[in-house]
Image (cartoon, rainbow, N blue to C red; front, top):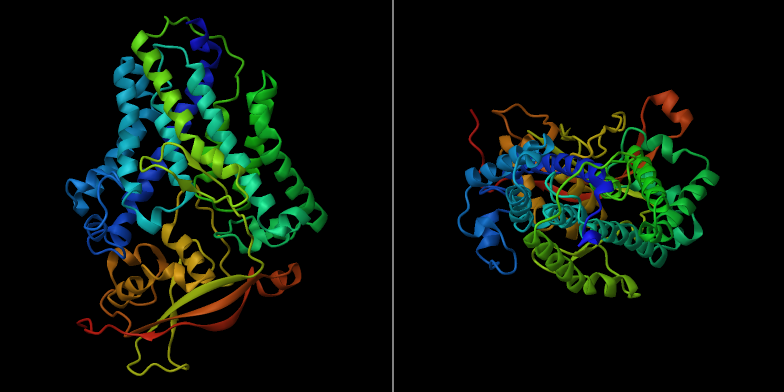
Length: 473
């Protein structure tokens, strides 16, 4: 079947595979370094508690066989090692079947993590990595030319990512239709980056241009992915530029980066194709079966996209094979932050010595400039943003988080930038207060050196102590 492969995309496949391996590496590293205080046996939402009530068919995971923190760490670090091997090109040195099996390993490991990750892994980029990672298994290696069908399926994912995000905006918040959302978004986004303050202070007419360009990129350009070259390459390049703009404007984990990876698969690089033999019959059969499966599973995302009640970031099968995506269907006009403090006083009062905990990514100290963390994902910091939107988002984990602070739990404190209490002297009380944050003006920045101005709103959690006091040396 001469139509089955596209040799001219061999470099596109190579770039895509190495870039995807890099995203996998970041994802597994994030899991390895953060899982213990979030999901471990003594974590805020322990995995064993989830496994006791959720059957395998609803959340397929290797951890249904057995769970321990050591096993989770082993899976995460194994994922890092395999991802690094793929990044170095190990799949190119293996027979086709073995290369496919090697690409299947990080997908299976990360699926096992996501399906027990609970609220910490409820983001759309988790399902997106799994969907793209599964398709990568069938993209082949140097023994075969890239299969046209798989290249098309990757574009289908990219189309759903962009077009779904565009539809949810147009149908959602009126500010997207009025072109005014970016008057607020750079200030109220989950985790601002080092340039977000400057993006916020761009002239408002430029913000209108940004929103209009976003609508074009997400609602018009995706259709061009299915047109002949070089139009498809130009469409993919425009998406890459848009995503790089988003990378500069905030910290969105690896969402922008994996979208760029997807777009790279649609770019036809000017390079001579090497001579390779035709694909084996079994490979053709497997790829065609994959296409049939994706076509069948796509009915749910398509139905969701055309529905006036479109939802964002939904998986329709426990393997996360074909999902629906979207982002920022509504934009907050005001930024609230939960500020967590502790005191050593036996009888806490408003004038007690309350010391503030510092987070790595989320705003806290008004004078501390935001840092760049993406594509690394600070899961606790992201959930703190949701907690500030509504206490309901914090229900499953915030109480356990406060308890760990009262214990000076070492693993939990590693998630933070700064703990105001020495290791042997945990706080007697911890409280949380809600503040309104806004970016300072140019004049305020020059006068105070602070990029934020914050105003107390209300109590989020009253002073709380452990029922059983921690032993103090």
